[in-house]
Every structure is written in C-alpha cells, then in structure tokens.
Image (cartoon, rainbow, N blue to C red; front, side, top):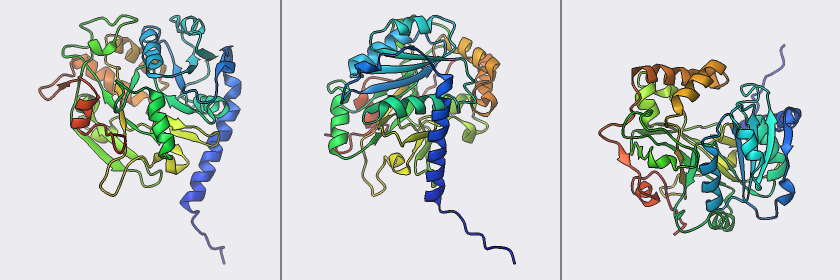
Amino acid sequence: MPAARFPIPAQLRRRAERQYLIVRAFNRRRALRPVVNRTAQIRKGHILAFVTMRNERVRLPYFLDYYRRLGVDHFLFVNNNSDDGSGQYLAAQPDVSLWWTNASYKRSRFGMDWLNRLLMKYGHGHWCLTVDPDEFLIYPHCDSRPLAALTGWLDASQRRSFPAMLLDMYPSGNIEDETYEADSDPFRIASWFDPANYTITKNAYYGNLWIQGGPRTREFFAMDPLAGPALNKIPLVKWHWRYAYVSSTHMLLPRHLNLVYDESGGEQASGCLLHAKFLSVFAQKSAEELDRRQHYANSKEYKAYHAGLRRGTSLWCSESRQYSDWRQLEDLGLISRGNWA
C-alpha cells in the first residue's frame, strides 16, 4: 500500500523558498568584484540605496542628486558590465560603493541575487531602498519631510516595509522628440501619466497586491493585458539578513512584509515610484536589451516595446494627466497618507 501523501503547508514552502534564495544569493557573491568599497562609511541609522544597472551614465547624475536630497546616506551599486562610462562615474562618487560583474543578468534572477547578497551583508538593521536608475520615490509630504521622517514614523508604527506603485511617466509628444541630457530633470520632459486604467488583484500565496495597467498595458499589451508589466513594488524595507526579494521588488519573503494594505476598509500609507523610462534614450535601450535577451520571459516585454515603437512612439492620450505633486496623486487615489498626517 503506497505511503499517504500529505501536502506541505504553504508556510513551510515559503520558508524553504526563502532559505533557498538566501543561500543562492550567498553563492552568487563570487560573481561580484568590488571596484570601490566605501561601506565603512555606513553608520547606524543610515538609509541605504541598492541599485543594479547597465549603461545608465546619462541618468546617474540626476538620480544620485534626487536621492541625496531625499535623504539617502549611501548608495550600493552593481554595475553589470557597462561600457558607457557608468562605472568610472560611480567610482568617483564619495557616497557610492560599487561592484562589477559580467555574469548573466538573467541567470542571477534579473539581478536580484546580487542585490539580495548586498542587502544581506550591508543592509541588516537599516532602512533600504531598492530601485532602478529610472525610478524616483514619491511619498506623502516628500516636499517637506525627508526620507528619515518617513522611516522614523514607520519604525514608530512597527512597520518594516513601505509600498510604492510604479507610475509610468511620458512626454506629451513622441518619446524621441526631445533629447534627454545628463544632469537634467527627466520629468521636465516626461511629465504626463495615466490617472486611472489600473487593475488590482491579490496574490494569495505571497500576500502581495498585483497591479497592472497604465500606458504600457494600454499601448503595448492591449491584446493581452494580463501579460503587461507588474506595477506593484515594495522598495523600502527595514532589512534583516533573513529577508529576500522573490521577484524584482514586487514581493518579498517573509510574507508579512507584503501585507502593506488594509483589508478592513481603511488605508495604509503608500507612495509611488515615478518611472522615467520613456525618454529619448528608450528606443536605443530597448534595442540593446532585446538583442541581449536577458530579461524576464525571454525579453517578452522588450519584444512588445520594439513592435510598439515601430508603430509610433507617443503614449499621450486624451485622458493623460500632467504631474504636479504628491497631493495630486493622493487625490487620484494613487498614494495615501494613511495615519501619517
């Protein structure tokens, strides 16, 4: 008589997955070569930013300036074999620690193994912001309260994670019409967004919300909206070495870090990541990434971009809204103050 088979409880499966991701990240440490390691500068209470990038030289000056002004104390970058001068630029920045790798972005779970490793080693006990070079955090009162005010309130509220919906920004005309220059504000050009057209579902296993929609789904995935990119992010976390990102910054383990919403009718504080993807550099970047085939689902997303760009490069529509400030996003229900008055 065959032995009875009992299903493994979801909690145990998630625990095993988290342990696997931690071990996997630890093993990937050999792929990272330190270029300049200034992590001795990190002090208790410092807010850290973790970034993986390739060929983002034109974006880096504004990105660093933006987050310095917001209150990030130290940046930890993984340079995935850039050849545009990004590495040299970052190595010269006094508040940046830099690692280089030519390993496969795809085989490192799209860079998350590298970042999980650095988060494990340097992020423990710190509020850590994990973002891409084209993502800019907006949160309630960000024009008057630094990031340390938000993390202090989160600490007092015994919250260890903070969500931010990815909000795709775009110009009013064709993407390539105005050249984006280094040091300039990308939102001077890409100042428009979709105020609605979003769907939200709940992932029962991980507990996170799954958000899709916006201009990318509208323009590039209209025939298959469920194939559109996920817009839910949890970029700000009070890190512990036992944590791990599962899929980009869309969700983490342990599961409780994904429970960043209120199911009883109220609202928890949340933000947005303004996404400066659609600038004049987008066409070149898309062609490069399509050729490399290092992104999710064999670069399916970049294939859709390439096909869409050949039809035309304007994302603006009659329902588009021009961005003004965080209060506008709160009025539209895209961010929330929650109990943070």
